[in-house]
View 1 (cartoon, helix red, strand yellow):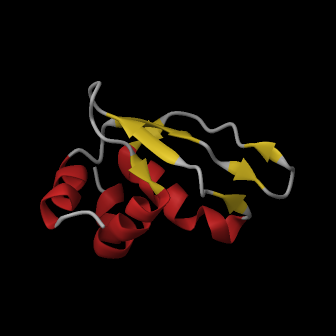
View 2 (cartoon, helix red, strand yellow):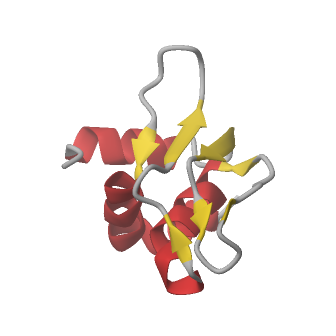
View 3 (cartoon, one colour):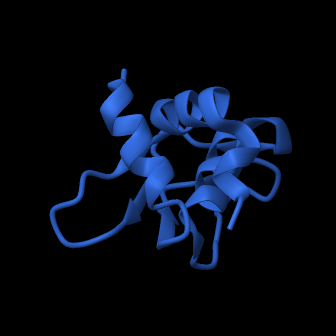
Length: 90
């Protein structure tokens, strides 16, 4: 579970570039090839991906400087539940 401070820190950098790794397309039985996108969009995708037929158990969102902790699927779910569309605002 992310702390309130960690959640707010991610919201503050929602426009940084992020890469999503470890997503499996259950329909096509392949690793999903996902483009680099804004962090807020990456969080939204991972949080909602299971509904779209993706397995995100191994997913991680990589962003920021070297050493910045990655976000896992449960982190993305927590962020999306708390901030929702605010993550998509510019």
